[in-house]
Image 1: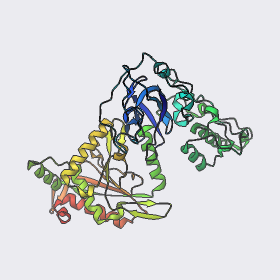
Image 2: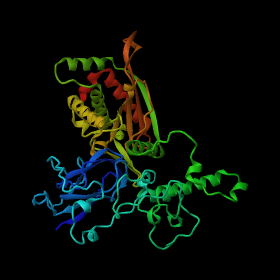
Image 3: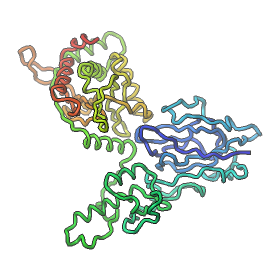
Image 4: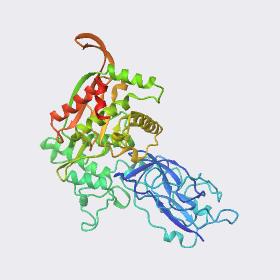
Length: 487
């Protein structure tokens, strides 16, 4: 006798509300163990594998690869207590785990995945045909959540496999706007919206959700519905007064410019866009910069690497200089609590560093950078950079930074005005190190010169503090022996 349990996309943490299915790791009919990864998803933070807390036989999958699902949406159903061919009970059947995500939260089982077929069915969603379920199992299965705006892509790309009757229904076509002119069906009942992002968008823009009829399943209000109302409102305001008397209903097709390539702002790119826009909205930033003679720093690094020990990277030396500077100027290792109207100075330095990857810009975080020497920093930078290139950084690797170091000199540029990585208070940018004419000891000479830029939150300190920090960093670059005072 088997009981069919439904496993839903778990809470991903860090404020994440949705994820995109990248690759299924199991098929319908496979036997899964407790905590075995069943699907690889991409969030706005990283790519992660999701382990299933049940052991048994997979009877159905929900969503094709490339589909975005909200937290709480069904992923798979598992027949718990079923038997494998030969009469042996399924591995770990009936057990349940508390694991959430591989690499985030508790650790998943280290055993190899076993993929064992128990039937000959071909289609996803044909699980009940492959694995007989107990009587009444379908009736006891929890009802799935309705589709939210995170799955709008399904309207343009229908599923390529049969979907069980309890799976998501496709959302309304792209060109179907929400109707804000008709009275709500249930003015005193709950609003047909489950996405917190949609609620916040409506609240911030003064849209009454009770006046909307959503274009999603069962009248569910999607993000596109709120955007349609905002576009219609903007169109009315932009038209002359004579034309406003008879406003025409706005549609997404009419508002979109003709031609051109449309690239969705989602995943890592969408997360970066949201964070940069929020930084510009909330942080009154200012930038100061200085040119420094890095000749002695380059000589010191060459001497370290010639000593036969593990090689020391230039980024690690700059990071060590930053942690020493933050110990002198802790105001820049802080954040602003806007609700409490307080500046929070932090005890530890969790140093983020910008890394360009095939998936876009990410900022891995070196934990407790203030407690690491140059060799330890070099190793940690190398480890996180490799994970970033492979796309296997966990959410924990990408969050919790208190200060960011951005070496844009690797792109061959001299200077920049960095955008503060919200909710941090400052970012140090480093340009390329190039030979330039420089006055050294009273004479003109060719030296290795670098431009350093500091963008800081003007709420946490004044220009004097920011200038002192940057000047100390420049002094350490020009005379690395200055660091000996802090070792």
